[in-house]
Amino acid sequence: GAVVSQHPSWVICKSGTSVKIECRSLDFQATTMFWYRQFPKQSLMLMATSNEGSKATYEQGVEKDKFLINHASLTLSTLTVTSAHPEDSSFYICSARDRQRGEGTDTQYFGPGTRLTVL
Amino acid sequence: GENVEQHPSTLSVQEGDSAVIKCTYSDSASNYFPWYKQELGKRPQLIIDIRSNVGEKKDQRIAVTLNKTAKHFSLHITETQPEDSAVYFCAASTAHTGRRALTFGSGTRLQVQP
Image 1 (cartoon, rainbow over the protein chains, first blue to last red):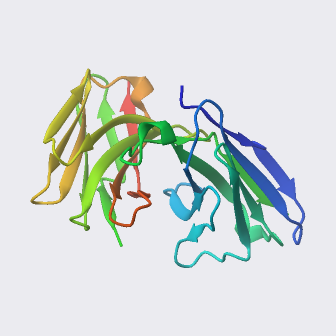
Image 2 (image 1 turned 180 degrees about the horizontal axis):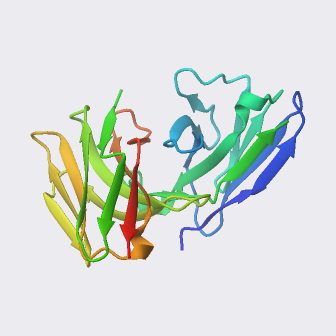
């Protein structure tokens, strides 16, 4: 149980275009999903917290108008990188918390990640 | 906000030896400390976690210790094997913001020499 999927697994796009990444919890409902970015040989940096039915909470320094997050259902959150530039090239990983385990649960289940390359 | 520091950044051990990775955290309200193993290009995999009401937890060759007073926690891997080679991340989570987001350490690249 507790499987999180991401789509696509990798994407190459031209500078200036927008890219949408989907994060799905396959066998559980996720009230909260998190989006991380990981540059090569670096740690995971939290970008934003996505809450079902409400606005996302962005970390300091993350532009909310550039990284659009939508959490329309308990099993799906999307991250759209708008007007992507080469410096946005990174590994984007989502994670989800299991709603059924209650708000006290801490365990996050990670998706497989999406490698974005902007030319 | 929370700040997690992790040492060492790289660690090379001989197969069969033990490996220890240490982390410190800054927010005394943090109460959940997971450890993740990440292989190149893959998702982080939870290998063990500990909550602040526990001082030590063990799962076969892996153990984690927590010192709340000093605000540090450590990962211990015994009888290391080549397949243990990966990058290991510690993390800390606090409930006081309501979000329970994880703050990650900078990672330790473990190389187990056969």
